[in-house]
Image (cartoon, rainbow, N blue to C red; front, side, top):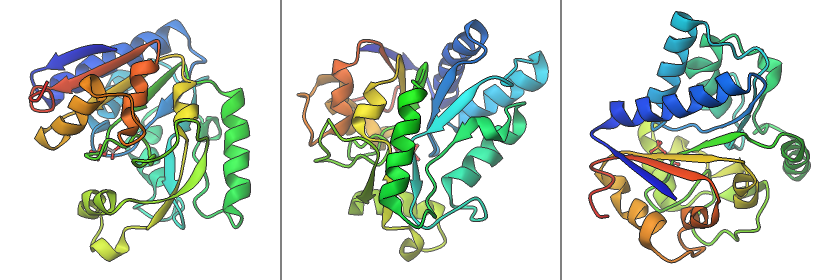
Length: 240
Ligand code: PGA
């Protein structure tokens, strides 16, 4: 794993943007694996700025997102599909039909997982962007998730519900379950870029980089990925 430590969040976002722009420029029909959460917002803002200023085109780009809350759809401002449209997609020339996010409102969630999994098999990510949870989760693969898991329905860990409660009016409003790509789908990406900032990620980052490869810290599986770059600010790197 390549580790890049940057001074702060802005420098982390800039370093990630440079790598993503290289991929999009070299391969205008690349598949981008995208993440939600607060971590990639600086990266997405730079992609939008660069598109406006330099005309970098996303017309032929395809995207696949990591996860979605069960029960939420585009009309909910807490859904991940809403988040992606608002924070990235509507600022690019990316056709919405090229974007893919598991449908949290599907009537048959198992069938939706199967559909999304089959789709992912045809859309290998040229680069997958990831954040990391304070408990070491990636996407919604919580501690204990088998490394071989594919897209599945997950009950969120208490720590994840608490972490995400800041984005909802009340903790009770945080959905208790989600659809998520599995670790196998993430490891299938040609390249992975994982981002982390802030002291509250330092312990998970230490486990990711220095700990054993263990299902109790899902992100540690990335030690086995042939092309993984970790970009972190000094606070997230403080225990390394
Ligand atoms: P965050 O979430 O970017 O909002 O910190 C990351 C995650 O839980 O994967």
